Length: 427
Picture 1: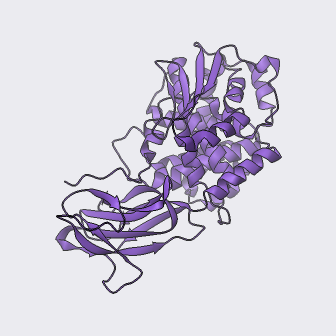
Picture 2 (picture 1 turned 135 degrees about the horizontal axis):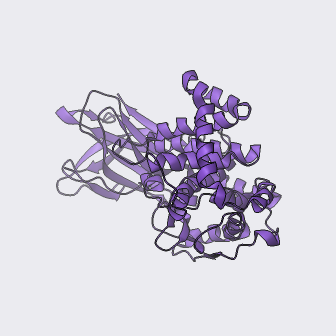
């Protein structure tokens, strides 16, 4: 069996599958971090004596500007302020750090919350590009999706730290917690978080190959569950958003009951650990009001992602055992063309490959019974590159073929400036 190389891959399954556990009410803390007033100081009653924080220096120079951005937004400071109403049984340490993988997690053995710079970077990359027609805004994806994932992991944290019993699959309960908490704040906050979380569950997790044995639901299941809970809790607020989705009317009719079920569980198991007076002060804070400086910084980040896109491949043909080789540029090395193979594509399924840079990508595919997808030898829009039929390979584009390799003409796929996620369908 040929080994699938790691080049270009974003470990997106880890972003949800390995995201160990993050404090539930961290949700609006991160909203505050990205969107609260930079110079504002916390009211004395919201200063937590049980939470410390640190911005750890990154190993990679490319993350230095991000660290300064997070400090300017007071991300960890405001997270500690937001956690003030929750009576925590242990002292927490909040950190941002370079992890080497895409993640944001709570480590129960150390009582530490860690937000990886790679996770923030990925959200910045996959958000809608400037000029793209989308029902989602860049702010909703970068801010809303970030806090939505942290709320999901916060569900795990509360279940763990407060010994909350969970009847059923814990991952489902954590998703429910995420959306429910978002619904307890202003309309703007609820819309931003729900829409951001819906975006990544459908457009990021939803395009990966479903792993039915996994403890998580599939990306699309999580997408529909998020819509249902939000619609059930605030039908007037979310009716237009749900109308644009394909949530079945039969499911939508029962969504208010699903929301009430979650509400009753929260009131019995978690609400007793929340200081009501402090909670009111947190709820009264306008968390999602961008300052001009923050709005400009977010816009700059959106502009910086104009030439990046995610790439997935789906096998819609009758050919089995399909593998794909690609030539593209990595966002981390935008000046170098690299040829990489092989990425295995499941029969009648899809595989999320990763993020690329530029306005084009080249590809070649082959499968059982000598089936191939390639450009004709006379096609000058293609790119002739070397591949190895027998094993995985990775090299700079244009490299002379070595022993065991053959030259084939890769097909060209052009990328429009509005493309945030590109899916190649093999027919």
